Image (cartoon, rainbow, N blue to C red; front, side):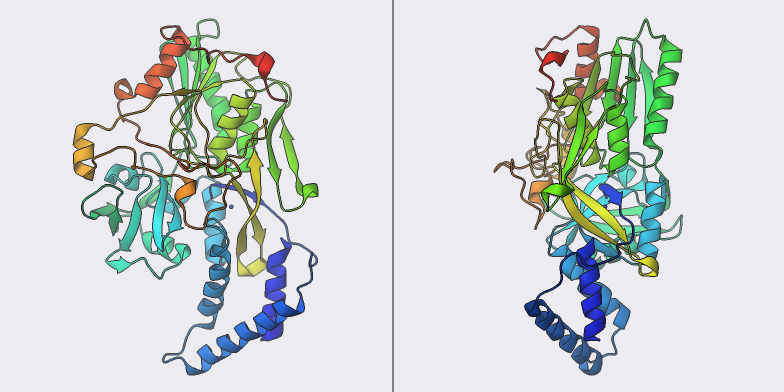
Length: 446
């Protein structure tokens, strides 16, 4: 048993979600464990055998091992975890753009499930689940004591069945109880409309279809309005929880002629990777405004940070979530996969967004309607969502401040009530002016 556990631990050293890359199988151990490590593993093996032999009920060996692995990983940061074979398959399905459930991106905080962002138009979104909500009970069962994977599994189920959630909401005077009917979640990665003479593109998530969907949206907008009449574009990244790193890079590349998009820096200097833009701007230099808020995380922040640093776009809205870490998916064959935080990402100017978020060029707050504040039991809008910096055990960013990251992520369903969008449209049409728009390209980061 000890020998098997040692091999397992060594494999874990070899080496996402909102943002992830995929790693292949590794062939050797990068760093041999020291004698102290093997002594600790011997203790673990002894405890494991005693639990198997003496616990009041016969435990499930597989569950014990999986829970132990997850305990090790969750002690590192909120985004590292172990996925068994089923969970790994579900993750692959999600990155393709289809999955079953309620439609929420979640993490763990203080042993509760924290909602990073509900996907727009999904059962959770329609039921009123908000970014920053803490799920305390699922179908009357306490979440404390469950792993994130266990909690997510309990929220999944057959289409048409109901799941009950008890939510602790910042500022609310009592728990919020919601009954949500499960549905097949087919989250379109891109939606677009034409706002008279402005093209509006909303990216909902960065999955394998995002770049293609965005290119199709641009083509349709140009055909509908005509290139000569287009005043510019709004790229809406609000409430976008992130997704695949490669898609964030290719979306950014679509608007940049050259220069760095993002760099990822791992434990060793030689592991630094830089992603650069290729020649070609899909919108031919048209003015671009990017919208962000507290629900914009990870891959969304890569795009906003790249376009902001390269002076290609003006960022409008409120501070983003602040998830600046990269999770690598390491396949473990038939045993599932390991989601491990392996690097932090940096914008072209060298900024780390971890725990800090993207500060907009132009801050435009979106106030909550009085009826929603009353429903939520809020006295203030400032505490509706807190970002990465509020997650227990998060990696502290080198530019993190006491105020942390994240801000209000409310987006009105009616565009006429959307102050951030209206401000962006007014900028593009010349109704409003600001020194940040259009950005000056001669000061771009390289």
